[in-house]
Length: 303
Image (cartoon, rainbow, N blue to C red):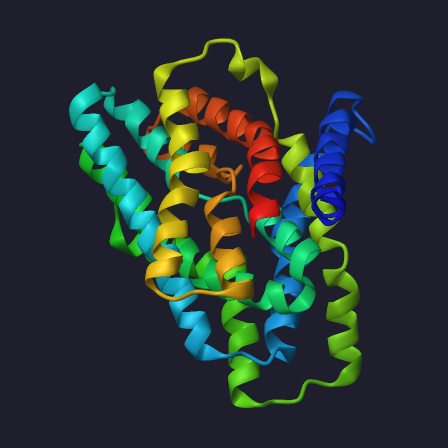
């Protein structure tokens, strides 16, 4: 139990510290949006490039982990589509339910994997992210195009979004450096390494800054459905798939941690750009982030 507390409590405390800093307007009101942007475009890519560039990657176990994670995403999406046929959600609301059900928070994911498994775990987590982020974007944008007939879907703009995503780019660069066997100068590696150490704490503070409790005043069935799908059904589905595809040890645990993550705090951006239910998306993001504190305390000891 001690290792669970040691892994989870620091993450929770840093998230709630971010929430407290925002409400205290410390150090200033406009600091956190800028810091979040810096973390997303500089610090997190440095972490991913460094970890993938210097890692020893076992493709056999890695591919099974990736396939398990992506299969879980597809199954949860199909479950939500079937539920929509029964419960008849409003179309704008359903797009937010889907995002809440299949997206994941990269900051919390990497921080928890790092706390439990260190650098070896971070490498596997980064590889999962490299496949999961574009795959989830394809599914979410497709859902918007299908359920919102006036949804602005463009294949060209989608590929632009993928190319501009700094996390995908960082995974690609780190993977290419690793595969090519190029030896980077020590001073560059050390510089990237120093910057990477700031990524996870700043990312977790950003998660806390993104919490907005005012959206939880009106609890809706859509909010409950999305949260249960993400924090309860998704881990259960991936647990079954992990056994089916023979995942064991660290790969098994990372698959379960991936499935147990709250939705991404950036989900509201897609909702706003493509005409989804922005307020519902904000409610789902806040509730899942808070609720995952409890679910992770139940799940992590079982890994």
